Image 1: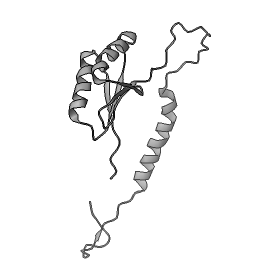
Image 2 (image 1 turned 180 degrees about the vertical axis):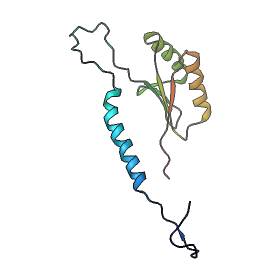
Image 3 (image 1 turned 180 degrees about the horizontal axis):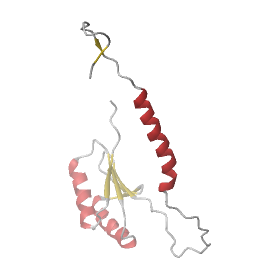
Length: 139
């Protein structure tokens, strides 16, 4: 929207917009919001009684860590196990804790076949909460 700034002979267009009405409207909206915002919270001040908890929430257990070093040796919570005994140990731990969680750490130089065998043992043990742990690659 352009306005003429003078007589009819001038071809010059006045291109400024008067922002005063815009600022007035924004200030009215701001004041309205400041006044109505505290009224939007429907809180009633109530003094709640002190009671004993009926349910004690336990802290989440740390996950079991399975590590495989570059030679292919398997460790469960820093204790070494032969590959053939990993499944039996995991089944034992699953019966002790049905909600067991595993973190799998493997050296980057380890043979993939060893990792596949460990993952198969985890699956046969019935454990479905498995996380793979890696390090961030430097840019």
